[in-house]
Structure formats: structure tokens, C-alpha cells
Amino acid sequence: MKIESLVGEQPQAFAYGDIFAHEDAGGHARLCVGVDGDSADCVATLARTLLGPFQVLYVLHTTRTGAALARYESPVLSQDELRAFLRRFGSFLNEDSRHDLWVRSHDDDATLVLDRHGVIYAYGPLGEFEAALRQLGIRESAVVEIPCPHIHHYHATWDDAEEQMLRSLDWTLTPLPLSDEQFVQATSQHRMR
Picture: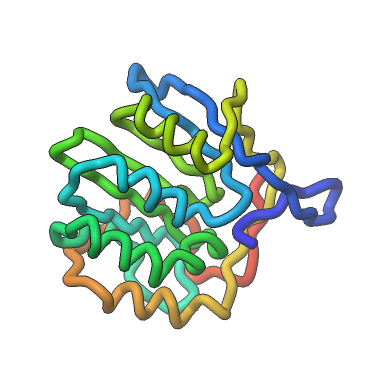
């Protein structure tokens, strides 16, 4: 589990409810998606509506392994390469909060973001994205809310996956601004209020 809500001081499981909402983010229209199942698979489904080619930006803002906190930019990936990457690392992306993942299709002027809370933000052809979400049984809502307060989880069981991911592509690294760093060396969890 990536995050849990806090009720008093007790962590509790919660569900987004398989919903999406239209949002304005600084003058840019987007969809905000709260999936209860496989968020990485939902990203792959949304990416299938795009032409590509793709680039992945993996933002490692918290580490348990001592890896460099950085923005890791992939080389150009085909649709098949992106799908293989998301299939290989999907469980890690779904279950651990140490990262954000951005998928960019320049030719479509589209971006998909899977953030540390398990929320997906979709910029680009919103009509196509909305149709794909509805086919997955995800319904429209007024808002997708991240619970507040909540707790992030950084699981030791995913440390090997972090190391494998950072070796999986010929990444170009850009240091994180200090404002983006969460924890240089994380423990198993951290509370966010």
C-alpha cells in the first residue's frame, strides 16, 4: 500500500473509488484520476490512446537505498517499450511512495503523471482519455481527494526494484531542487499532515 489515511493516530486503508475529475491546473485542463487497482496499468491504457514515441521522467524524491535523488529521464521509448517498462515495474510504482512517474508523448503534446499518492494526472487529449477511463469502469466525479492527514509508505521489499529500475534504462540525471526532496534516507513510513 502506497499511502494510508490517518484517523487520529491510526493508519487506515482507504480507496479513491475508481473516479476521475476535470481540473484546471494553472490554466491547463487536466483529468485527475483515483484508481483503486493497478494505477500503472491505467497509465499504460491511457498511453495506448497516444501516438508516441514516449519519454519517461522518473522522479526519485525519497530513497532507502542511497540512490541519487534526481530526475531520471529516459531515452525515447516506443509504445511497446513503454508498455514493457510499466509491466515490469508496475507493482513497485503502485505500492511505494518514493517516486513520481511522468510519461510524455511530444507528438501528442500529452503528459501522464503517476504521483506519490497514487493519483494520475492526464494532460492532452482529454476526450480520448475520458473514453478510455470509462471503458475501464472509472466514473466521473466532482473531485478526487487525497486524504488529509495521510501516511506515505516506503517498503524495504521494493528496494531491489528501485535499484533494478535505475539500471533498466540509459537515464539522463538532473539533480532535484531541494524543494522536491522528501527524505534523503527514508524509513518505512512518514506522516504527512
